[in-house]
Length: 579
Image (cartoon, rainbow, N blue to C red; front, top):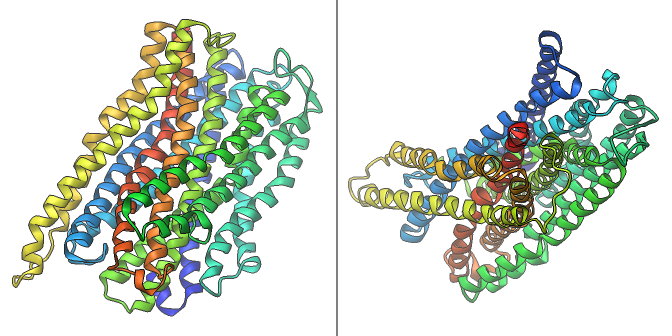
């Protein structure tokens, strides 16, 4: 991408988006193939009472996906932000170096960290969502007497994701024609266009798939004896279009093309404190529309098909997962391209083009996180529904003291989890700053010492492995302690509280951090005028906001998806023991 930006903007964009699509298409393809092989092996090798029992056993696939996502998201988030914050504080504030200046010992760890957190972390997170929502839908489909003997109907949830791969390939072919990239403003339009095209193409595919795979009418249990095929299509489309709306709302609150981020930049002329106040308010405001979308999707889908509808809504939101991952992976590619341009001492024009790609990448990363959070909420609710069936919980009564106690504890969990992960970033960044400051006198002095990059990489690696133990234990052990120690009602309360609390906190944290980051880029590009560019007081204030926002948007916020999903899947897998 760096090399192509030396030629022109379009060539650089094409390489970055093609690199992103490798991740998006391959991850979903591997996930679908692995799950299909697993189903075939279980069907041929093992003996089960029926499809429902077999799919309950296969639910372990979702647990495996989420467990790895815990390491990718939490460990990766701590790694990347320890390096990023350390590089910012030691280089920019003390020596006036660019964050990717080769003399900064933390610059390699910072660039490696983008891949660890944004590529491995986001990939594992969305793979976990795909695996769990598919497993939840399979379990619920297997429980229907009308669907259990129709192999085509049982594979319906898997076919939704499979057709999403084909739609993704067609979308990439159409993007170049419908949204060509010629100038800088075209980059953001093209990335948004990828989502719009894939959503439009997926809509008729979903209708055709539902018509072909499902019977005209079937039963999904008590109260849902006459479910029509188009009820299922409607549930999927609600998730599909809610994902697009959440993406657009996220973009509005985190892109410097719109008023919210520009308001933050204006307040940073005066002080860093006012910018932080505005940023926090922006994050809280940005929860309103996504929560309305999720609420509407759940209400209608559940009314039509019960918990099966909610699981299909989650699969609908993940129907364009190939493209959501493509535009998300595009971000770190363009970010690292800028780093290479800076370290290689390429002309300012090249860095200007990579910065343009990177600014759009920041927004798409925020859109990707919005998708991940929204789908995690729907997935968690679907898993919760499957858990209540397995643990024989007929109703979750808030007046029951065990339920309410669990509810309070569950609502507290995301805050404890976020606090631990943020402190971990702070501790690791502190160690990184000390290490950089100990090296700088020799690097900048007459000795011109070569920076010890390896030492900084080791600090980030050790911190990420050490600091993820406590948050990980909290998520994995809480549902087991609540369920096995205090009963299924306490566990049901805990899952409800964790889900409702995590959604709001995750959205607000991710969007606040994204807005502060793009506010800094807006000021650096001269958005407030030539007197407020790099080196000005406004720019220093924006760097403070960006540094505070780093652990919010890349560590604690996205990692809360894991709190929602992992607690629910563990409860489902151990549901019979909890009962």
